[in-house]
Length: 341
Figure 1 (cartoon, rainbow, N blue to C red):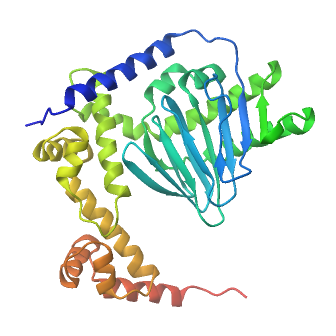
Figure 2: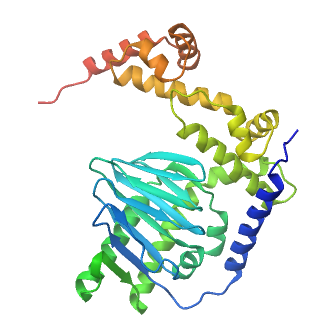
Figure 3: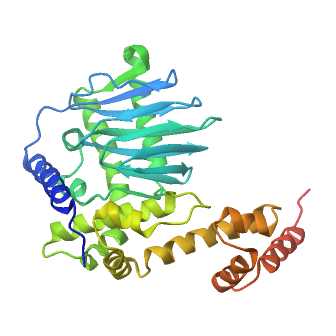
């Protein structure tokens, strides 16, 4: 059975968010607003005039850049090289190039301590709509960390180059800011932002197909349940590799009992949270076995197994070979690889 402790308050808060978004989606577009390009010059990125209806395209290339986004904003965080750390809603991510994060709650972004570049397109829902996104596209988006769509980086880099060209031609943009506005500029920016949102929307097509598996009498409730289950999946993926997953801690995040969470999660993702956590640990173990020279006992400890023997049994059950066989196979494939002079 479901534990309803705190459930009513959370449901009421979530419902208010949905009602607020729907009122925005039904609102006719107002005066066009631009996209503000910001190049991070220091360790902290301060958003100017954060209350206005504008999108911000933030480019950071210096180690340790820090960005804090307010409630009610949609943010699209895309590492270009290296990795980016982010925290929000009691979750955290270490996002590497080739992945991206779409989030709709307060978010803190912390750039890598070493060299790395990242882009973040962010702003209130009204700004996304008025710049060029379709209401239904914004309504369908799910907060999720995912594989980066193939054309997303290209689209964001093109938008950055477009805004940078405006800066050079107009001489605008003090302190690293450039606003893409004006009649011609707004039409071009609108097409670009529309393409960015559409790219992510297409990437989530398979995820949206799972919403009908979620509990709920209406599509709104099913979608709300999906977003809660995605938070659980985020917590599993972003947890410490050597830390045992606590089902009590996970179930408390969504106000479900342990049994109810396991049943609902399995009905949607075809595996229980425990099975998902084990799969992630063994996936990490395979990487360490093949790509490093660490002792198997150290890998077992790092990935949260009680002993090397239990690690070896689980590894073989998942990958069809022992850790020793996996390492030997990797070494053999490297030695047989052709060398071009």
